[in-house]
Image (cartoon, rainbow, N blue to C red; front, side, top):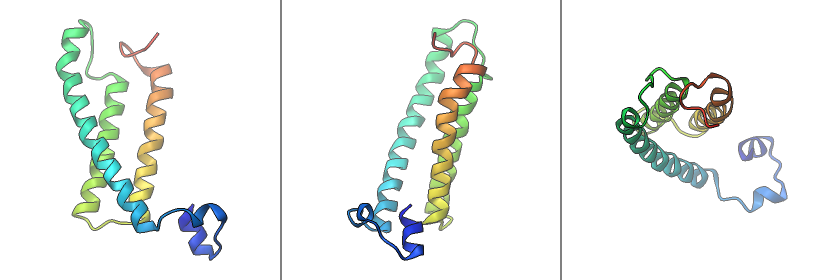
Length: 120
C-alpha cells in the first residue's frame, strides 16, 4: 500500500507514521527468515513423529504437501533475495503469495482435502 501511495505521490496520515520502505523490507525479510527456520524444524520434527503417532498415514496427505509447498516458496524467496538480487516489489509479491497460500492451506485444504490430518 505504501508503494502505491508513493508512486501516486500522495501520502495519508497512516503512512506518515510508517518507517521507510527499506526498513519495512528488512523487517519483513528477517521475519521470513526466522519463520523459515522454525518451519524447517517443525517439518523435520513432524516427519520424525508422524510414524509414531499414526499407524495409517500417508506422506501424500494434502496438508503435508501444502506445507512443503509453502516451505519451498519461502525458500525460493530467501534464495532469490540473497543470491538472485531480488528486492522490493518482487520479494513482497512472493511473500504475499506465500501468505495467501498458507491461509488457503490452513482453511480450504484442511476442511475438504485432508485425510488423517483433520482436526475434528
